[in-house]
Image 1 (cartoon, helix red, strand yellow):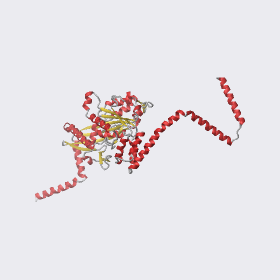
Image 2 (cartoon, rainbow, N blue to C red):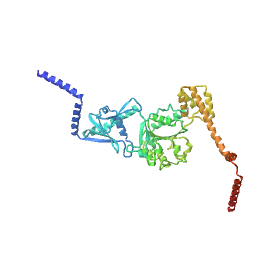
Image 3 (cartoon, helix red, strand yellow):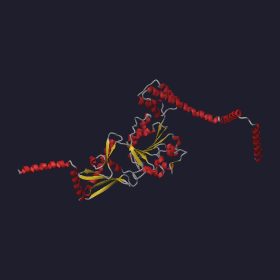
Image 4 (cartoon, rainbow, N blue to C red):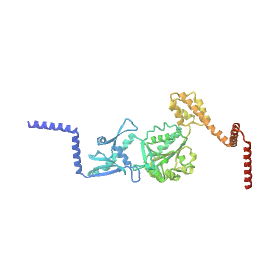
Length: 477
């Protein structure tokens, strides 16, 4: 009977233990026991700061953040943050909350992470047992780098960084980032096929040229100038370059930069493998505007393009856009080293128009093409953005869309002839215009004469006074 009673007791205890394992009581006891054990060990802590002492981003911080957000144990933390992904609206994202820990296990040892956010800096704190430091610290960090690289390779999320005003910047940097979801690709951008092919080949060569640049003693970077009228696709091409390279985009608004020191700080806070964009460079270097912002002149912008500060990072691509390249001093800006590749974005000709119509409407041939071709040959062209908007607005009727293009071409042709007429009028009709004003004044006087009685004596007195004044002025001279 005793063995049976013993077995029954064991089974009962197992059921009780299984029941307690589903309650919070056992968890409380387990946490208390773990805290007691922790008191018997010596721990070491390591901080991973978001930025270093030079305000540059710490790549390890980003890797740790990606790794921790991928852990299953994140769901067991006391408090976590929930978000909806921007690129995937149906995906729920979980991230670690400030001042709360998350546990991880590596090579049989338990470690913990805590995100510490205060008024001075943003850091992750790694805590592990002192006896495990030599055995797991470096292998564990290598494990984090490997896993985060795999996650980044799978997700390939590009981010767009925008610079803040000087007074808005704080310890977390002068940039604000949002997911970059621009859909443009090298295939969808409307540009001459040969030009796109050359740019793609140049970018691919650049990606493989790290050792070549180092052997030459040059910084591993490349600069492009995109020039053309507004609406010709320069911004879309920048987005296509970013997607082709899988680089983050840093869009610098020079109106938010107060001086040269701020511009250098912004450049130092960019990361490697990034696309640095400055749009409207012709406005910056215009002869009428020799400075931008307060206290920042042209020399600061030239140093930004190829000075010592521009060498603080590698594998960067700088992109500048202008509308009119002739407004820029070639000797200062256009020399190799500051601008390596020039890409022209012209207005649409008829061949480009046919590509756009095929993309937007799926139309390859139409009876109105002959009239449209004559419109492109006899006058200035339209921008791809203008044609695209006409196609989208009239996509239900291809014929109406093509007629709207014909109307737009006719309006632009009339507008291009108007300035010539106005300039001619301004040069040859100055005296005629003055005479017209005198005639208009005489007509008004005549109309008043009909309504009022004319006082001849008053006119004679006024004429006499004017004659006396002229005589006096002649004597004085």
